[in-house]
Length: 132
Length: 175
Image (cartoon, rainbow over all chains, first blue to last red; front, side):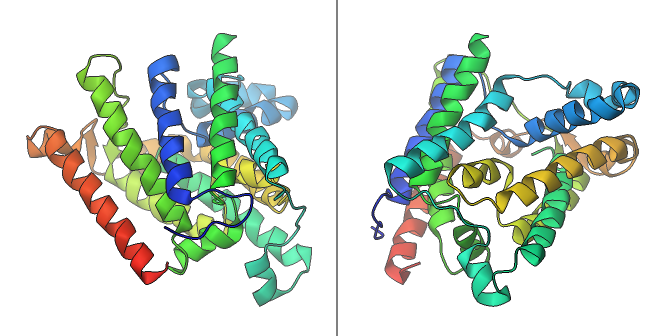
């Protein structure tokens, strides 16, 4: 078994427990876990503030209506769950640039922000195209 | 309302476990993509193997129904390649970006903003995609056991055994 640092669990154990969470979610609420649809809904909610007519006319936003639903709350829960876990394990750490990035490209925020932003655009477009 | 509370509780549990498993970190995600650190793979595959057995058990007992997405080679392959490229740049996926923000790694914010723009752009592109990429190699809602014409347990058991053997290899190699 791999070594586990303080405040952390063995990845096999944490992963298997996450599998149990997904089983109970399907059994109890009929919901399979997913996250990326919530980004579509959030994008629609934001865009609606500026161009409500345009949003209302887009097929993809009709299919994924700008509404807070089970999955949207699931995604918010991930943030809160990670916050709780990191505080309880004393591993919460405010960090602007990840260690591996800093070792290679330095600690300037700009380049990391630019690459992360473009990566986010490309990754989400791909995720939606693959319907993942 | 109940659905929203279930969603929040499920997310809390899932996010808690992601953080405890250390899989929210950019360094771990890039470590997996660079084949240097298999923490992410250990976590993901443990989740998948556990859920695979549990979900099919519940299905056989008639307690749940599967929710199968269409296999569309055009969308799956091109979308998968784009997702991989973006994931390598961002170092977080949609769910883990929220978790990374929760544990204080706020470079995830840039990724979250980018993903919102990516989602908005996809909504604009969807009509074109629907006429082109999403018509290429559409096999509908198929599953492996169906295509092979065998009982699903003939796939689940070998996949579970294969997963455990892979884990043993990771540990022997110190990955």
